[in-house]
Length: 177
Image 1 (cartoon, rainbow, N blue to C red):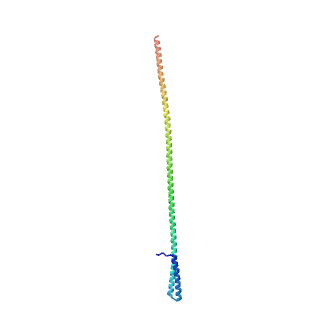
Image 2 (cartoon, one colour):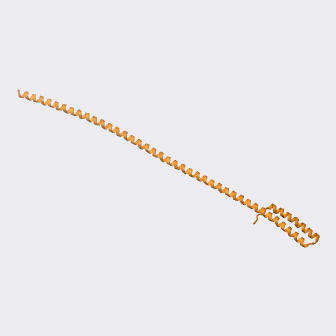
């Protein structure tokens, strides 16, 4: 179907209408039914051209409105896609931030536990050193005590030997008497 330009149709219709009126008037003036019918037919054709132009204008307007609605819908779809993409990006960023925070909390907890373990280990090491020092002091004291006891035993044996010698001398002197 060929596209009809509304302005051309209106012009053509107006011209055809004028020609039809002229034919009809001429046919009435000379009494020719054929010319009157031709004038009426031409006026009907002129009216058809005007209606075609009106319909074409309506169709063009409806097409333009449909295109505008389509463009608006496409724009709305693009906006919705952009909004959805932005929302998804925001959600992913939030998930990533939460993951990092949890990871940081786990790391901090692990560091705190490690520090606590190191402190306990250091305290245990100090306690062991103190116990070792006390044990060394006790060994040293026991060694001194043992040496003193050995010296006392040696002195006691020497004193006993001296006493035995005195008693023996005294027994020898009393027997000589």
